[in-house]
Length: 148
Image (cartoon, rainbow, N blue to C red; front, side, top):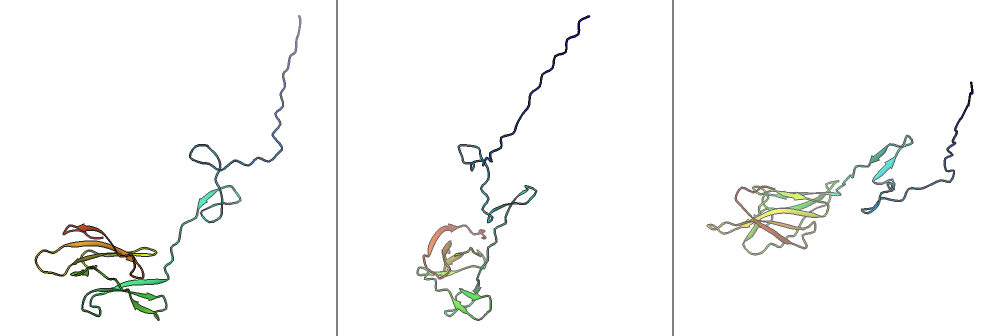
């Protein structure tokens, strides 16, 4: 009887130098860039997206009857002390119409409805402008049942 004992052994040694995964791009795999403002990693390694918070420094509202009897937009600060009209220079024969079309406010713009003042052939439009009334721009003509 011949007894032969063979054994194999292999040791794996982890790389000792620290390795930083490159930031991922559209063409190569990589890691996540953590800047603390949009993505955070806790001490257990859990990755969390930070919610974006939009803070407005004032409120935009619409007065149904402004200085000339037509609707107009106003801005009031959060204390209620500064309350000023937003001077929007619409083309002739157009008035702000935020009640049937609606209006929205973004961080720096107002999106609102306007309509012709003349009787008969009524046309309605969506306009946008900066919060100070500048850079007025017509976006589109709207159908009767359109609401923002």
